Image (cartoon, rainbow, N blue to C red):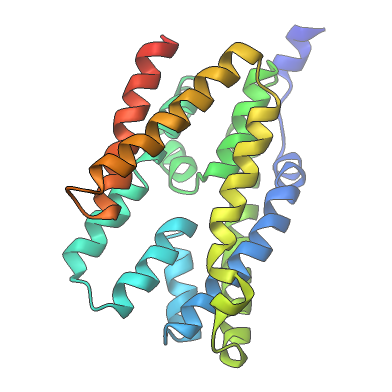
Length: 236
């Protein structure tokens, strides 16, 4: 029975169906991103292109803020690179089950991978359920289309919302990641939950200490990297 399940070829449609919760989530966060972008004096076209070409929610919120402040392009590119560096680890996690596909297909899958679609894929892997290239493309492209549509809708609506912070829209992405964290913690064993909560505490302490010597943005990056390294050693 398990062998037949592993050999079964998943379809695009199944990937699209599994992407539905992500698609719905992206509609809300994408609209918020579009509104924030519009309030930062970006045009609908610029926001749409940014969503299509960068396709990274956290990075887009950061780019809006940095460009408004007149930050040099080199700093923006480097910051975006650091923020999205986690995608390297996510892609490496999925790589072993996708090695049978061509390099071009893997590039396409990796380029559209996000935290949420990775979560859907890795959950199937944890349940010993199969994934394949068609399923991944259905999953990724559905989420991609949803994000672009939502960003454009938000950019259009943003013309009538001068201060998105008054509605808490600038906190929308952070709220989504907090919700994802809570959902992950709920399904953990007690020993692993203690480990992760300890690492979160380490991160907060390191962030506080490092912020006395460097900027808060650098402190966040350094404390996260150090805590992740500690976690890798403790988790073995």
